[in-house]
Image (cartoon, rainbow, N blue to C red; front, side):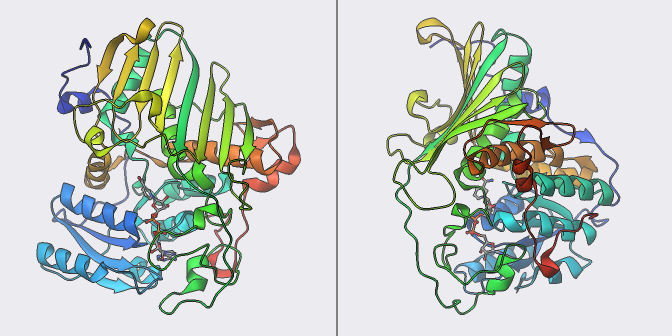
Length: 453
Ligand SMILES: NC(=O)c1ccc[n+]([C@@H]2O[C@H](COP(=O)([O-])OP(=O)(O)OC[C@H]3O[C@@H](n4cnc5c(N)ncnc54)[C@H](O)[C@@H]3O)[C@@H](O)[C@H]2O)c1
């Protein structure tokens, strides 16, 4: 395999290529001594990973709060002890996020709740003057994306979406390579999210477990009896299978793949139309979200497809030795990847590390660039953005557009696998008005997202 142009570029060089950042005058900086005080909202596996990553990658960051509506989560006290040792002050566990927002010492929050809480928590945080890191998929609907953008502009704080590929050096080099025209004209972009999974079986309702505030967990979503199929006291549980809390496999890993594809393609606006086929056709599960979808987006200049499912045991997510080393994946059975077909060449692009390779006939590799798991760049960028008064990588408008690809396809599925035409200017469907009812969700009492955030 011959190494050419991009091979051997250092990370420093790669980061210097071009990033998504620009300078934005923000209303306030962190404390004068440059210390950034953080609170974590949602202390599941991801929230705690993000928090420890942010403290590892940045100096002078203090964790003040762990907040979760499940008071029985294992490992929190151990985490608190670790931070206490590192920072010489002890973080506090609270069960109501409003206590974190009310504390004027807190500069920024990490929101790693399930998806139905992302935008409401983000808006409350912004209203309280906090910078926000909010996990993917950032929104539950297209309307929520509009509200998050409005609030970000209004309160003028850093809002970073947990689409960490947006801080990956190899993502920017892929974009620059495509821009240079070396693939020829891009005609077709194929996104893959082909993961394993099994049959979904419903569970009966149960008593609310001790230590959980089920009303607060549901928050903006319609109130229903506690069900262990929706929620787990010890792990992530099945909330992604319900439209009230998430968008299925698409809003989980596929959102990362499509976000990376959009970045590599120069961040196009909404597609003109969306069409999908699929459903619960692998195991015939009686669940709300589909086991498999094959989606086609019409971007005018090119078509983009996304194949997303949870049924195949023979495809693999990027193994650790590929994510963290100078190795490329075995592309045919790589579960989460993008193939970009130009008139001259084909690019394979990995998600969460894996880099990219460009091939010609007979699989001859003509260009390539190594890629590493990008979390650490993203965590550094969040704190740097706060300190440097600038827009972060993974800013909110692109987050909204990437999240919208999930929502558009899920709406096409929920309206019976229709071919839906979408107007980017008004963000409405034009050929099937009934589909517009899915552009905004339903909210509940004090958990209602305001029309004017
Ligand atoms: N960027 C990535 O690579 C990546 C990876 C994994 C997960 N995620 C995202 O991170 C988020 C969290 O994922 P997870 O796997 O940790 O989920 P999880 O369900 O295990 O954890 C979510 C936590 O939020 C808590 N919570 C719910 N409502 C709350 C509220 N009102 N106040 C405080 N806490 C509340 C829950 O009790 C739970 O402990 C999801 O949106 C997920 O999609 C992103």
